[in-house]
Length: 295
Length: 121
Image (cartoon, rainbow over all chains, first blue to last red):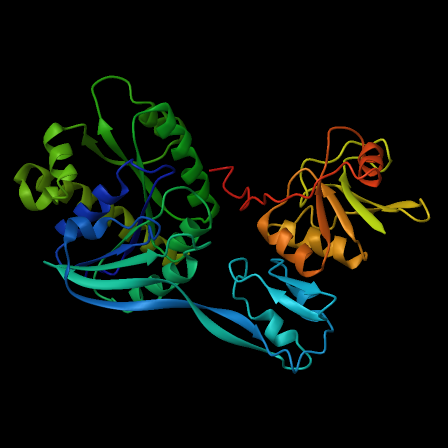
């Protein structure tokens, strides 16, 4: 029996290369599937899916609170904090907390010999779950001005573990920093989306280094392909990176996309394009997962 | 009175370091005894919150006055709560800044930036 429970991350080094285009359309041709928008700073997959039956949950992080009547001013919490989220105010003989610098590790609470530190919740964003056709659409939304969306991404992906029988498509944040690492940590396969520009190649090389560092199987989708030389394709060939498929620089596709329509739901031509891409990816991903389990 | 200045080198002729949180050293100068000493800025290698930690170093030395070209909001918060006055430095060496302070030629810094954390974006 074919194993459909494959987690696939879609990433790129820069914004605007087509992560959302690829992940939204792949999820839409996959039959029953899950789409997870981990681009929590600017989630826009939901604009395409327009999900209904929305369930929403607020996401909070833990922030220390000092009970000043119990605090002895030993400053162990301040010296312990590796993020410098606490300062010791000598004239008051008490610590002072910088909430937005705090990483919610809970260390200060554990280290306090007087048990003067407790935790309270601070809301940083939310997750939204809904349905669009065969696709379960889960999005993370980080409040503006927040330092890190990692707690939201963790929540989104923790729940994805329960979708046992369906392929999961993870629309990652752009770049190759912490939030992307959190998004790809437990995936089976990574799709790198690249555009045919010098910028595209530079950013592709960054995510390429990242997926190699994580030891993830990967392949590239070349987006916005034109006739003539494609610097991203040359890069793939020189590094021996598998090319999973090519999406043409097509005015019709561009128009559908700009109107927030899902191309595979509107046009047979694009349905075929993404279905063939989907089949290639699933073959690669299943192959890699089996190879992995034999290791 | 104890004055602190972020400096690039450990001598009075050093320039004032343009960064507070990431300055390599802090100069401390006692206006009564005219003695000075230097401390490595332990915040220099911090991943984040360098301004907070640097302000902590300044506060822990019992400083009364900090002379800096600029200062972030978080550091300012620690310094203010620790009742340390922040003066704006002038062009020139650490010594010239100390002299200018003693001649009452420096002004209080009252413009604190919200952080330079996004300068790589």
